Image (cartoon, rainbow, N blue to C red; front, side):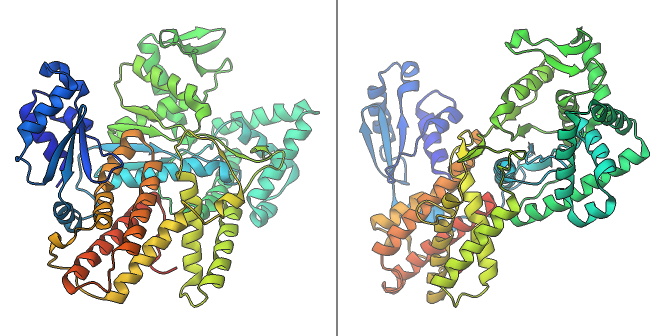
Length: 553
């Protein structure tokens, strides 16, 4: 049962308003005893003041809602106090299995590291934000298509090919992988400052690559394979999956069709030898699509990609999870698509940058933290804590991996997307307070209670669940799917992270104040059912964020 739907339907019977508008207006205040309906936006249509409308609704709804203990008016708000046994009946009978197909498709473009470069903490945000959104949309019944749009095209690969031929060998690259590619690229960049002929040679190889030259293509594919092998190791540890890994190169042969469509509709115009789309009416700078030398750009390939994805995937919504510095890029891209006459639901989910205490991330200046190093150090720290606090724990290495990776992901997803993050090992490795390890530990504690009890939680007498701590926990657990609705309404996974902290807090207060294993038999069963649903909710919530839920810690 969806309590908000029941309330909205009853209110709708009295007010001549859209039920969906009423549903969206119902609030769940921090006071975990009520659902509140503010009357402000509906007062004018009802010909009353907000306070008068609140009194009118309370009077007409009194005694007509079986799930409500009482109705109370506070100024322009109608507060509905939900019966504890009703909450218990709803929460303890529900299923947290994936929802049935809702007939809608969402494409999520996320992670997108550059080929021939290490996977570092600068890639973490897009990866875990996009990964959690993919999980949540899928759980809610969307046909969800996660796409990793690799940076695998452009002039840098002409430079890399020249650098490889001048400074390295296949044997060295096979032995040392991406380290070699980054070293020789940096060496090329430095020497090209003094020797312009190197850049000329790189441009030549870029053209060869674009024309399908056998040698250039084989080297490029080899560099790509080495990169993907390293990326896959990181993705596996982070629990990240994609439906498709398709880099920019995949769309090269599809750009001409997009450009032709722009030309046919008179949108693509010449400007100083280049081809652009004017966006002055959108208060945006022109969108450059063809350079003076005839080459394509990010915009060209992204335009081809969005048209391809609409045709292939028939998406209802597409989300791009990239940094805030690409806001203008996507504003221009979406404006060009609109000028073509398409009414796609296109969303950019920007996120703030990751910096180090010393400043911005910079490979050239050595300010970088590799994801593999971050994971290894975090897991190692967790292993030390386990040895100190629970040396007899089974599967220590597995639990250390789950808690260490969980700490990294939860730390990133705990604040809103747009917030910049100053990365520090000290903060990630601090397991006190509102952290992923706290939520995981609460899950493990609840699992321990169920193991000790080893009793059935069937045929519960819901009327026995009366105390305030049980009610608060029930209400918090009830809010799970409403929180997921909020997540996809705003594409903000941090709303789920914060919610799981609330669940952990409500459970720990319940655990300390409502005796479970020592209660009378029937009350014990009821409280154990509440513990079991806490386990289910924490595990499902953590999994949706991409975090494992160990049963022992």
